[in-house]
Image (cartoon, rainbow, N blue to C red; front, side, top):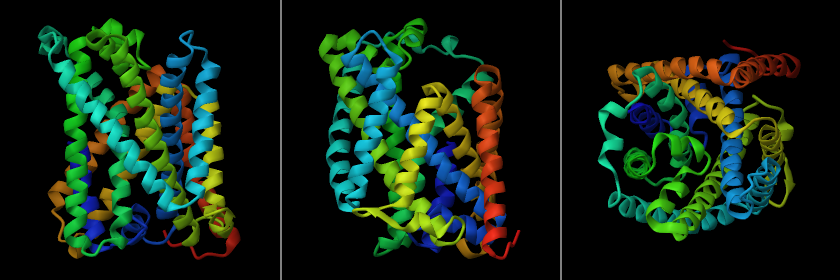
Length: 379
């Protein structure tokens, strides 16, 4: 629901201000060209870095389980870093390489996930899905906050508006259809996992729960198949998000909110921003575990999407947006953010302190850069 509400703002804003800038453009339009919009844009770039670290860690966790059942944490880290290096090189070759690889990977992984959802439906134990098994409402909201990370990709769809022949018609369709398809797939997969694994089993296999569930009704073949799907899913997420985050970095630098050097070509068609992004991802992979990164990245995008919705609230005369829907979108993001922050404080305080520090650095760095570069600050 929160994702759909925010999709409304992205659809309206993208149709009104079609460009490759996406959220970068929306924030500048609604909040002005100042430290506020610049700081949020820098924080958004780092949010994508955290998302990439999450996907890389998940890739490493599934890969390590398939090749090293002992669960050596350094095998996880090594696989995660190797994947980041590989897809950095793919992105450095240009958009065409990214598009071709994405089409192939996404097609295979979606097919496997659909097979998993259908196969798992025949062995579900209904008692495991009963309302009596649900956790308390605050825990549901905290969980929703963490899961929101799985939906953040729809925001990058708006970055393609500048290349659409008719963005006013095509962009809303692309956005709503993408989120709707993801909802159906995620719910189907989640029901199959919940119906086939007990809570204790899920906790014990938290880094590879889908594969563990598939093993229950498809045996070792199911474990291997879903392990492959997970590797493909996280690989495609890394590939696409690295492409999108490098573009965000490029656009922020081009607009003067980061140094011009970030836009320079470094190797092939890659930019300095692409390689800097990859380097920061490696740092996050080494410093944090999977759950900590998930909390940090989800919290970051809940704040960013609340900011985009707030920006839309100031532009409703131009977009003809419904203010009630926009306010509901802002509140949904902020409420989940609040529950997630409380949960993070209780379970992963280091992740909470790190995110607050990153947020502060984003604004302080933006203000300092504008001051020393001579750009006029308009708050």
